[in-house]
Image 1 (cartoon, chains in turn blue, green):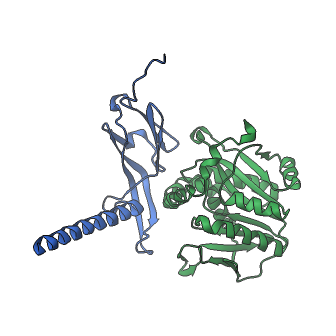
Image 2: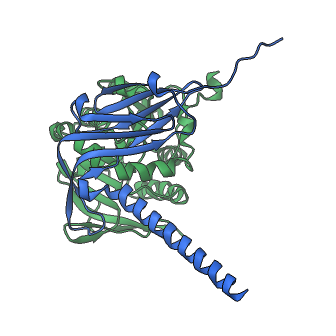
Image 3: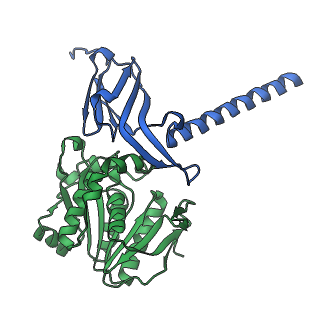
Length: 144
Length: 247
């Protein structure tokens, strides 16, 4: 009984530690991007319509369509893009060091499945706009 | 007891034009006011403090500063915040700023902001609209060819500021440019500053702001994210709603 109690506590502590690690990783990555690959997370907005999602991603300093890579599955979007030059940003953690970023990466999970084959993407004024038709959005019924 | 204190470290001129901006829609006011401070080389003249403000200081050139500060030059005073402030603080701040403006016999209180438009991406040059607290303000805007906003809601700090100033029958003008809601919008800040510069005859070189607009968008993305979190509480979604009298 006592062994089971301590085992449950140990498991709980492990889960809390893992969750705290996850939060710390997520916080630092979101705020600072990934230093190892000079990558930053762009701002993005998802607008939901009855039949589609429209996802708008702000990609300043990206010049060409060829520098943007969009991967779609039914419920996930992964966007990677290359800036045309490096941009220097203050490192909030050290408050002294500056960090340079040269690319974007963002992964978005969608609440409802989409049809990746019908998706379209346009790039305008440094903004990527994805039109993602939903796979199915209910059945129409006749009103009698 | 007042919950907000204004600490004047330098002489604040009387009969001045007071510009007051906080991070808001597209960070238009925050970008425009901080750019004005930098380009006009305005002098740091004091700060605001409150138990309602987040426990944050900002370091600039090794010097710890309050994120809500006062800058002056000639008859121009700018009060800006580098951080979004909690909803609880906004009402007290608007009341305090209006009271302080009266003590200083401020000629007019001006705010810069954005009007969120869903098709902003298709707009090359954002239009600037004005709101005037008094009939004289509205006449002044009309004379200077600034189109007045006719119908709609305004939510958040700027709404409070206009309301407080209206109570005191003081002059207050909001210059609002069409802008992105969720992305920093230096282009909208340029439009607002062009109109301000023209109607108040304040010369400011907007070239660097136009040239560095992409850098502004990247560097301000975290501030934009934090500002968006405060919108939910400030009823910002009302700005997309037509008012009852419009039906």
